[in-house]
Image (cartoon, rainbow, N blue to C red):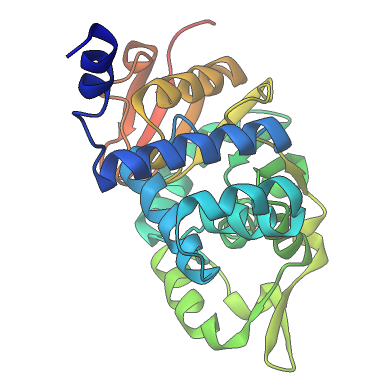
Length: 291
């Protein structure tokens, strides 16, 4: 056997299995997305990324991930479908009521000392939790001096959030959450029900700015008193988690507050020493450095 033949035999001695082929397809798909749309999903947690790509694959009735690449490159509408799948979130009004109650009891009491309050709600999805926050601020006499910046990278979700119109069938659940969160009025005071939908009152919307923002590559929102980002970091790998937490640290004023999701923590991040824990069970932290 000649050296050339031996080299060829060695090259063919390893046949990639299905998992290796899928990993290559995902890599090529992500490269195509970043090249075409400047969205970088390479630092998403691998298990979550693979699951969401496969969900999109099934819904599109495609045979393999490689078939998605030309569709992503040449069909922007298909990319919007893919983007929606990548940003599927679980949200509701006053989700995890005790978290909102802790905000009211432990954070709002301190925010009352400021003449103006800036709040960044990152990853706001379709807006239910943003309006929940606005309701609480109003009940504590803080809404008039507050500005909420609600951001997400999914424009379709932002459109729903800006409209503030939700299915009336969910109102009973939302009302229950509101009561558990320490609501001081009637939840019905904050929406108008019509034709099977509930529309959030405009006086709450007046203090909310909805905007497109990509945590992976966009800049910080400066001079924030409170940042809320719940159950977004769990979809990122450790490197991207640290980058985003550093972004939040830069955005917060000294003694500003950070609220994360129930599966998220600062414990193993590079920002651990820049915050102290205010409510461990509710994942509320306070900035203690001067950056």
